[in-house]
Length: 211
Image (tube, rainbow, N blue to C red):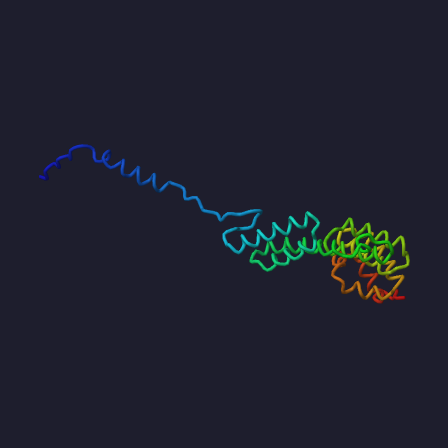
């Protein structure tokens, strides 16, 4: 007949619980990920990025002081740095600085052609309201200038105004039929690609209405 086992002295469960509790406590400690320091969404781990950011700050300070020539020089250095985001920001300010450095007659245009050139320059840097103001002045000064109507049509597309774009493009084509062929391959008119009116205007030979 098997002998009864002699119980061990003390409670083994109690003696071991502190050990288990300590181990579990250690396991439950959250491991906080160490994010690299950032400024304005730009990581600053790489010392080259830090140097690039310093150049950008200096260039921006010169830009706001309207010292555009010096700002341009510093912004061009920023473009050579490793951070694409800083380079993109610098490129945007560089375009504006170059525009501000142009001769005064281009900044304060008087003739229709000067208004047109300024309007196109404003379009190229995404300043739609300024572009429209200049192009409207150019159209008022030279209502028969086909290239002004064409530029306004392109601007209308870029700002999502289909009806106005069609109207301006129609005038541009009436004044100079060659504009029809230019518009076919102009990416500024991508907004109208699905509009049947655009297709009819650019490909009138399909319905026999070519001039």
